[in-house]
Length: 328
Image 1 (cartoon, rainbow, N blue to C red):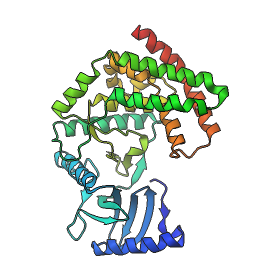
Image 2: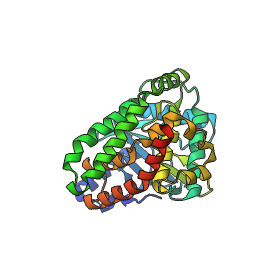
Image 3: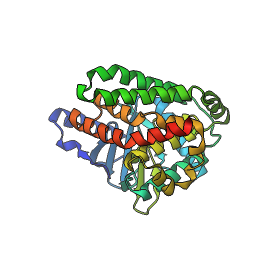
Image 4: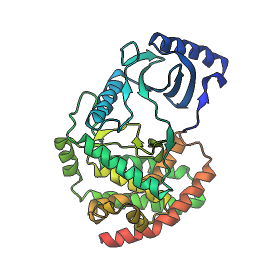
């Protein structure tokens, strides 16, 4: 499982607050023996009976939407998704520290790693199952509609354009080439039927997960793979998930498209679609890492991130040239 930090290792002020927190949980009918921190607003509760996950949301609407969405998926495909539960007192949530906290089933297991071929395949089929189960699911209040692929890439590219002057001078040529890739990708995408695809997804109620990092897949001890963390779920063309997953896997396999197809042959039809190739050109992974670093979300020093970028740039460059040749 993910690294867990016990609350009782924190400073005294936090410990006092967590005693209050435990008291609130007790009022909800849970007898807490220990609380562990998994990540921001996600806690593991050990109770006198079993373990639970506690997740905090910024609003009741967000919590109610996820409660509805995930539990609807589970009604369509029982035990395929990690469900929200009612608290023992019969309520869905409680409020603490400006967050609305919901209770989820705990699944003991390990996260996937996209450097492993079996994990790549398992992730792909978990996403396929998710797509199949959400077809036609009705939109409710607080449903997210994807901002749009072109708009998303334009936003990323604007950030990177503004960031380049603050990046190391010795790598300015590489960063300018990354900008060129992004601009060329957007130029080509503007000529593709992206808006029509997105309008059709809204009409037919197609949903995407939107955050297909390997840590959002868990393989349980009985070998079942669960897709988790639906914070970015939205109505959008489902191949957008395939695009993101392909990007994530290619970063881990050295940008070897043939190896990707050997592992997941059913992606071949997408690699024959012009819009998909245009989108693969966009250096989303490289820009994302620098954006996270500037925002303080990536705990790595600048030199290490620069070395990572140089490796990825070197591996990706011949693939970019090949795709451009295919598109010309």
